[in-house]
Length: 209
Image 1 (cartoon, one colour):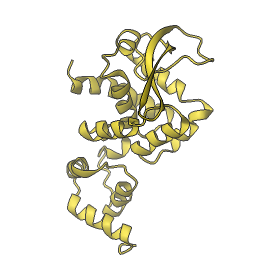
Image 2: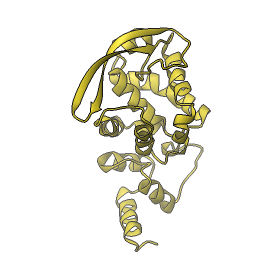
Image 3: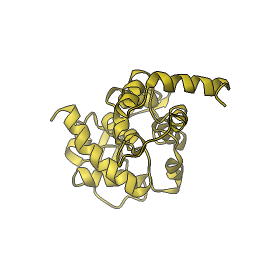
Image 4: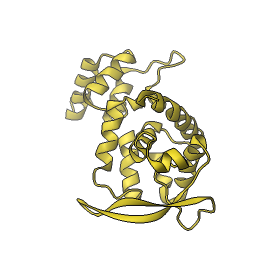
């Protein structure tokens, strides 16, 4: 299975579950799955369908497996440890397991994320990961594989057309990504990226207010 095929397979499952549970940015979660599971090739994901490195914790009552992992407790220094990880029955079960994991009070702020990047920053604030490169790695995956297409706001359907002003606000809030990826996505949706960027610049400088 190619990387593109794997994205589509797990991405559609994540997208459906995310929207069902009130999360707006499945793109960030898809990027997490790629990063945490190495495209579904890690032993934890390939054999146990745990795509997000979910540890058991004190409340987990299901099957588990003890495995070696690395944590970055001190910036720049990886520490090898062993821990118990959750075991799932298939890909769909593993995805649902992630959403069950973040449904606790600790992660309740994730539903208020304003963009895919903001979602990951909130995960960082909540203590989901210890890696100092995690956020940048997720951002890179989002742009490189145009994962934003899985988010509600980037899908032009039902003949819904937004004004340039609405798109400008979305760009400023990070919904459309950055750089070349943003231009491509804006063009695909029928917007002129040059015009949108000028309006963004004017609004940020106060000229467009």
